[in-house]
Length: 319
Image (cartoon, rainbow, N blue to C red; front, side, top):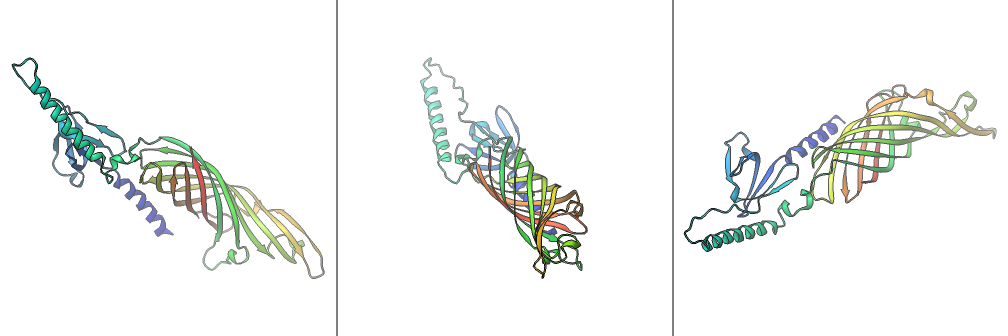
């Protein structure tokens, strides 16, 4: 599990680094991957992205068509500044002809860049990111006990049953690629039980279901790869606080003499009121709809010396 957490953390770091470059597009169609240092009226001062410790370079503003910055915003230098041409002819027709020629050449180069499908300029991902949004999600929950080596395995006599979870979230974006996500979810964990529920009054055969309901508060660092404005894969990792709402056992008991009855007991005293977990996962956004898979890893005991892990799959919408 430690390797999994380390891998997810490295992926988030890598995702941020891959998208921290500025891209300069010249009017002749040339693309320069760089880190812009300063923009003056006459020059763009920059360093090559693969030589950030290298020399500072200058590019004439007149040669530049567009800059796409690392956060996805763009700045267009569409019109080349006209060069003053002194002439004794008051009609200055020669100057107008030269300026029109330069403008036509710039427009042709710009159109050539925009027409290239492989360039990210034509990709709608360059749209400015939305700083705040929220949404709803819900799905299936597959819980599992985790016990120390050598102790009785609770999964043998309390195997998991399919549960569910649902909630809402709010996302705060730092840029197009990195954001902080806060969630509030209701999580239901369910387990089958045979002969291990109830008091001595039910010491005969027992069939029941243990239901543990929690209110979960996760906080995620979320990394998104902007393949396009409509389809966005992402990964996330962060801690969660889980507050117990209820712990109940429901079922039936019966003995060899034909006696039977119902069981409906509160087991809240057998489980801690709060436990801490670590959650990581991945998903993909399609327009306003998304699907995701996540894994909750219990860090503190849920009751006694047992911890709780769970795998979840979900669908959701964001607004």
